Amino acid sequence: MYKMKKKSIIFLVCILTLLFTGCTVEKVKLPAQKEITSKNLKDVFLEHGMKVGTCVSANVKNDEKMSALILEQFNSVTMENAMKPDYILNQERSKTEGKLVVEFNQEALSVLGWAKNNGLSMRGHTLIWYSQTPEWIFHEGFDTNGAYVGRETMLARMESMISGVFEELDRLGYINLFYAYDVINEAWMEDGTIRKNHWTETIGDDYLWYAFYYADKYAPDYIDLYYNDYNEQYKADTLSAFVNTLKDDDGRYLIDGIGLQAHLFTADDFVGYLAAVDTLAETGLKLQVTELDIGLGKYQSPLTATDANLRTQGKFYYELINGLFTRADAGKIKMDSITFWGFSDGISWRKEYSPQLYDSDLDPKYSLYGALQVKEYAGY
Picture 1 (tube, rainbow, N blue to C red):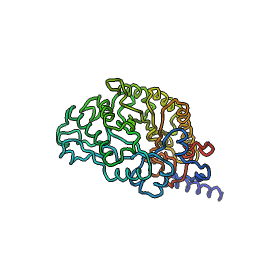
Picture 2 (picture 1 turned 120 degrees about the vertical axis):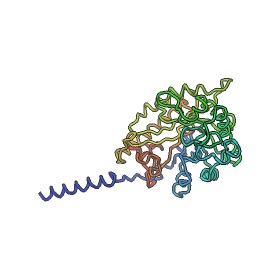
Picture 3 (picture 1 turned 90 degrees about the vertical axis):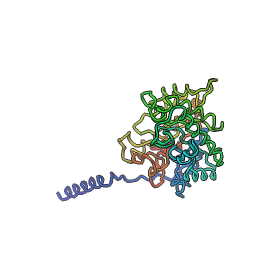
Picture 4 (picture 1 turned 135 degrees about the vertical axis):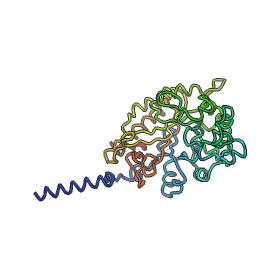
């Protein structure tokens, strides 16, 4: 009887502990990478003709341990936020000069300098987006108290913005770091309609064509121009039809590739996802995975980071990347880069889903070994 009561008390204490500590799970420590393989991510991806990247901010770059990990594993970086429109446009100078003026802030400049000093390539993200774009650029006098401007004025402002980015990067000596740039981000809805926003309101739906027209006009030829989107597995037919419209009068593509964000979940179907990749590959354009992370569970229903769930995640990473490598090696897709949207669960924008290659302590997860294609440590 005493033993039963004691067990009941212990059980109750365990339940209460789980409730008040957010379901703490005992961590399973995997072997260090160097104990398993002599290859890093750069080595593995290079074998398939690809760069491998991550997103970065000044805080990450300034952290000694995280910076060292990036330089060890990755050869490409994308700024997480600092090159989005909110961060690169100077309102006061725009008012003075009468056109949209591009001026990179100190965070962007510090990351650009760090990338150059360490031989890192860069993806530009992003020029035209409905989000993280200042409201004032759409108004008379670059002031939200003014009326919305008309089509021709907004087209001129778009051209100023796009030309300004490439001209400023060139002036600062950073233009040759870039091999790809997201010209437009997230313009299409899952139902096949164009997302309505200030660009459509002031210019019209053909703002999409003009964005690529201006980017093609001002970007160096060695920078590939991308359309980037999420939920691409549900938009494959829409995007395939859309990119076919991005041609000049001579029928030449103004676009070089389609960016697949790949913000996925372990509840997703990786076979179905790869089928969407195959559909998009039929356009003949390049494809890049631009923001990869694979969360535990499904949207709005994260799973706890138990060993079993992390094994499922590791296997998903393995199968997805293996599927992409196999297609690239066979010439079925033109893919030269895969970028992970972060690398540590602790700094991920989706940290509640534990979506990354390393945990919050920067210890390797099954996910890392899945990405490295070391199957026996990927959760199998």
